[in-house]
Image (tube, rainbow, N blue to C red; front, side, top):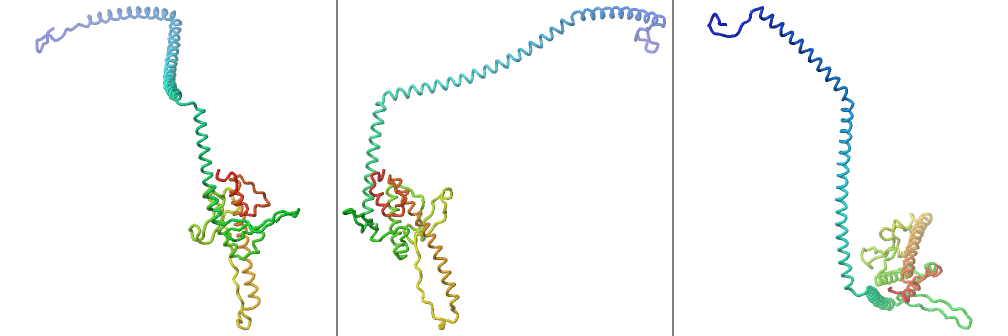
Length: 333
């Protein structure tokens, strides 16, 4: 149909009657096809109903198969890891076995072990005897230098019991603890200093470390006044940890003036001063006694290391015990 304006054919036009006819035919076709569609849908639904149970069963079997497959994959991975670790262990065992074979082959080339051990034991025994003889010689020279001897005494003759003498070092008597007050402080200080030097050199020659260590007031070996106390770590085993003096102080001899010459000096003040002097002297004597006991303990400890048994009744005889150590058959071993 041509346009009245441009006189060109633009589109095809229908009249109202044709449109009604077309719409009626379209509705009829739509209704027909809808019926067919519903019938096919119903048939398909009925057909699906018949296979739905088998479909669900198939899906369940597929899910079970997937789970089994995952388990198999995990098990395979675990087996692979186990195989890898066993390969590493087998490799290590093979290397260890090869090393043992090499060691065994090398050992077969060596002389018999019993002969080697016997030879080494003999060499060690000879070396020990040599060291012991060297130590014994040094100790004998030490005894001669310090002149440790027993003076006095009397052997048992005619049924009469004998008497023990007194042990001296450098010509000085070292009394037992109960006889210390019979000797002046200068004598005690001198003999104890000699004994400390003798004991220090003896332990140095024998390679023994004593429980209680000796120090000197001037912080140099052998210079000043000796003090004794537990060594390093003594807090764990020693009862007295602090150091105690190994010397006695001489009591000053003072002649107090008469009351007429010194009016301020009364008998009461004199008594107080004497009491104060007695108190420090008593404390100093107690500390010295503790230090002396430590020295005796060191001597007994040294005797024990050299195979010498000291009975309790002879523990206070320091020089006698040291002489027994110097004469021990196990000296230096």
